[in-house]
Length: 126
Image (cartoon, rainbow, N blue to C red; front, side, top):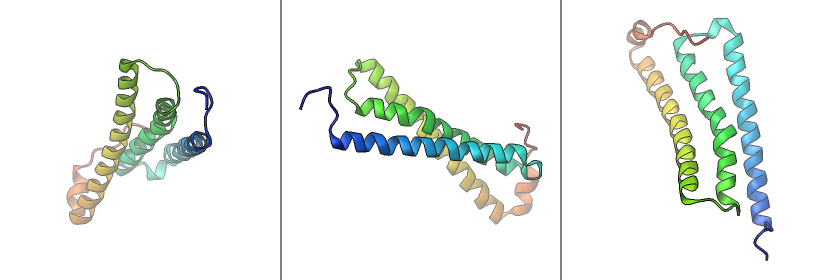
């Protein structure tokens, strides 16, 4: 096979990555819009959910296309490859840390509900 032609496995990987990225972008945009438009559910806990949705939106919009570029046959310099890898790692790490913050918030909310309600400030990001 020549170097410029993608094989079947690469086509399948790229197609699956595109489907995942588009569904990630659309799904997280729906979450962000629904929490932004519905004033009755704008509580501090939902600020964490919006931050998770934003992080996952960036994973779908930035990290997934960069992952396809990294796995494709595009010639990249070492520093470009390192930069792209760091961006992918940073965005996925932010998503995981947002998920962990939601888990800790829910755990503390179940363990000490009165303490968490008093300790949370008003959400001002909306």
